[in-house]
Image (cartoon, rainbow, N blue to C red):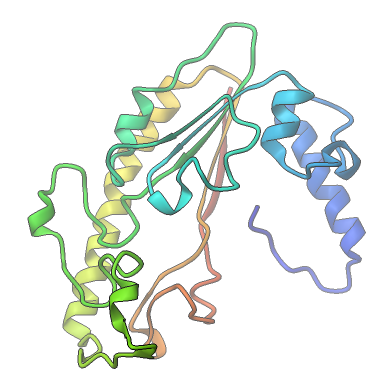
Length: 226
């Protein structure tokens, strides 16, 4: 989970407080670092120790079911579209008397910041970004890396991309409301991210190999349906 970086505090003290919060969320009293051994992976603990039904629905192909992430889940599904959180809600089901854990990997806010009803031919196409991994090998010829002649983005294009991401976040606000309406009472919902995004700050775009404070700034919102 994202966290602050408190000064003059031993790491062990910080972790004790963090695990105490997990006890509150999970309704148990003995969750600790030792509880996670030997797998050190929360879905496995929930499934094997607490009897949760565990499910993952991922949007981005880099997290597909063949990755190491697919452990400890009863179901692990790569969604048909990378940018349709609402389609995930239709697949969520809950069993009376048995707790559930859902991991939803949402793609609307990831490049190209597209909403599900926007035709792909209207998405921005940026050289070196769109399909970068799919076509990366094409840039190596005869054991040498071909130099790109593409110029870096101008600020107008960066501003356009930033507005697209903001629009995606606004759209997802409504979908998250639908999620709260769907889940059972006594459910914790955590909204966070694995990275931030740059839109021209200090000459950077995106994330990837970029070491910038904006990349490490992520949202962290937690709510409980009582």
